[in-house]
Structures are given as structure tokens and as C-alpha cells.
Image (tube, rainbow, N blue to C red; front, side, top):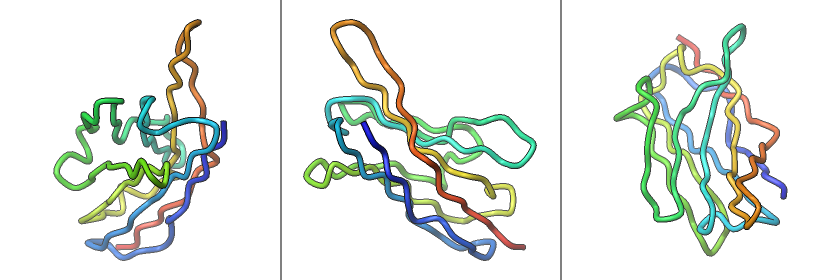
Length: 118
């Protein structure tokens, strides 16, 4: 399983970005997918998840500003992030929860850095 995250960068407060996570070795429609972030000096936190059925859930700090989606044909999960604030500065990681007969296994991508300037 490989997860390739991209789309990060430097953006001004109030701006937007779209992150992409291209998956290989795992189907984004057949497994749980999510985005997490880790700011300097802080623990990694949940940003958004999408279930196999397509149900989305969001962490409280991003509700109403971030949107998770997926393109099954491209086997890619996206995170649209709007109304950015400096507090959103972090490395954003893509995560897959692969469902197998023996259990659920987690896989992480390498992360993409989002920096928001005030």
C-alpha cells in the first residue's frame, strides 16, 4: 500500500488549497480513508474521514471549512481546505484503514506541508 499526498504549500490567511492523496495497493472506495495533521510541537489530530459508504466526518476545528471527497476512478482522496488560518499550519497526512479478513490495518502517507501566513 502506498499513499502519495500532494497539494500543500504556502498560502495567505483566508485562502484555499486542495490536497490530494493518490492510493495504490488499496481501493479508496472499499476502505476507510482520512486526513490527519500535525502542527509543530503538537500531537497528530484528526482532520476528516470518509467511510466505505461515503460518509464524512470532521474534526471540530475544521468543520464547515474543510471537505473530504474521493474519486473512485482515480483512486484518489481529496481534502478541500477553505478559509485557512495560521492555526491550520501543519503537515497533512493521508491515512488508509484497510479491511481484511484478519483485521483492520492502518497505512500512512508521507505528508504534505501546509503553511498559512497571516
